[in-house]
Length: 190
Image 1 (cartoon, rainbow, N blue to C red):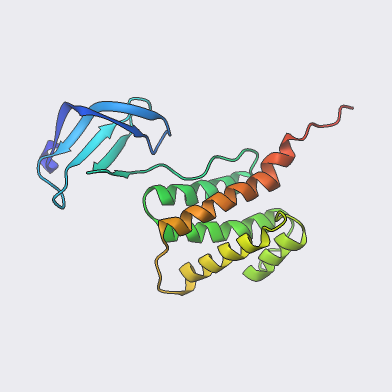
Image 2: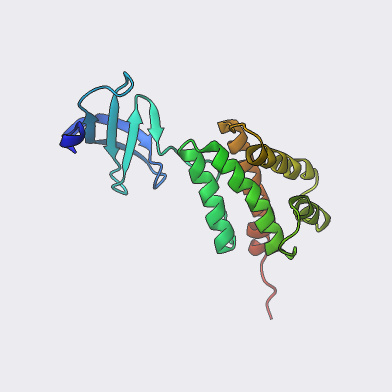
């Protein structure tokens, strides 16, 4: 890496951070620093002592950052992968991509729970509400995801970190409501 303007200096001064890959809060003093400033800012790469993956810092901006929301148990594999994708997109500041993935989650959740493929998006939202997959007072949130997703899809507007974060947090709650909590109900003994 020294050829590319980076120097492996072994100890570059300890820095505590939450690793965007493994989620552990670590302190690392191993890594690389840029031989010259990038955009007049100090650039360093720290190696996580837990997972051995690199985290890039441009001054105080971390890439990848921490994925918002929490993992949700008992979610079907494809839905879990899409939810993780929406979360990871936020960790690398791809907020519009995260909003689009969040919108797609609503369609996939509806189909996974019995809606027919090929419906309009508004029909998927209606299905979730009519079949009680949306908790009380949650219809406004589902409509909010639909509206933000439509803005990201059909308008020349970039989504913000706040837009992406609020959708992730609602999806986390929705996935817990539909998948995780029902799976925790003890099975009747035979």
